Amino acid sequence: WKIAHHHSSVMPEGIDIAAPITEEEVKNLFHLWNDALDTLDSDAVAKRYAKSGVLLPTVSDVPRTDYDSIKDYFDAFLLKKPQGVILESNVMIGTNWCQDAGIYEFTMGATGDKVKARYSFIYKLEDGEWKIAHHHSSMMPEGMMAAAAGSSDESSSVAPISDAEVRDLFGLWNGALATLDPDTVAKRYSSTPCLLPTVSDVPRTDYDSIKAYFVDFLQKKPQGEILESYVTSGPDWCMDDGIYEFTMGATGDKVKARYSFVYVNEGGEWKIAHHH
Image 1 (cartoon, helix red, strand yellow):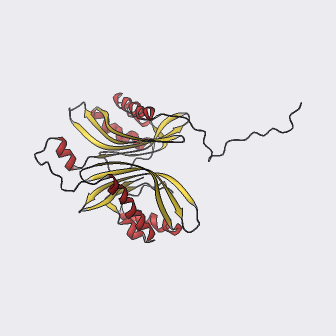
Image 2 (image 1 turned 90 degrees about the vertical axis):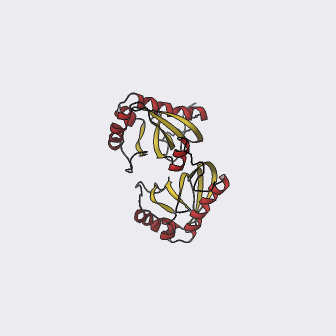
Image 3 (image 1 turned 180 degrees about the horizontal axis):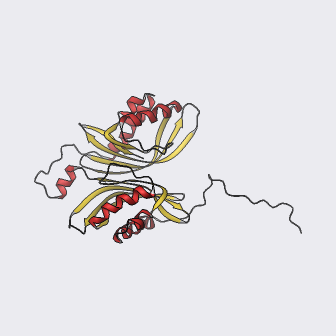
């Protein structure tokens, strides 16, 4: 018996070999990052991020999109000797990626201060190791901070929002897409937004740059549908993470993507503060 045919080729980029990971293992990835914080070595922390990682940090308005800028952020942040604990966690798992989103609390060893923040980590498998591809951290709105500090004002200025109402906010954005008007879409975002779009590597952090993105994207006549949704909410803010699918009316193509929307109540209206 002889070999009549032997074919060997590199796997195409679009074909993934899944590395299994459990929900508990996803949650434990936070501890690798938190342990790196404990070293007080900004290099060790920055190396927890992927080669094309994005950090939108709690105490900076500047997106960090490479090793040097991420390390620079932690040069300053680590002076506070932060250590974190997760209070609420929502995990989602896909092929060689996973997401953990919720609320964490830091104790600043240098001062004893405690700070709560919303977070989302998206991890991807890079060279056989789980790395942070996207990390968004934002301060809890003032209403929740006051409640956590035991404020005498027990009421929030904004009526509570249900999980179903949070999910319906996607419909407002999707409806704006249907108008094919980039101005209408851009106005769905808050006054201090951040958009990390599906088909661009450039963070959009103001009205003009967000509108410019949708000038091109709307030519595809996209309409979206949420396939999986995980909601977290509090006074004056809410977050919806999951998977959505777009049908491009111009071509009929269908595209699935992970998403996270963080909404804030601005002037009595729910607006998108962060969209990845």
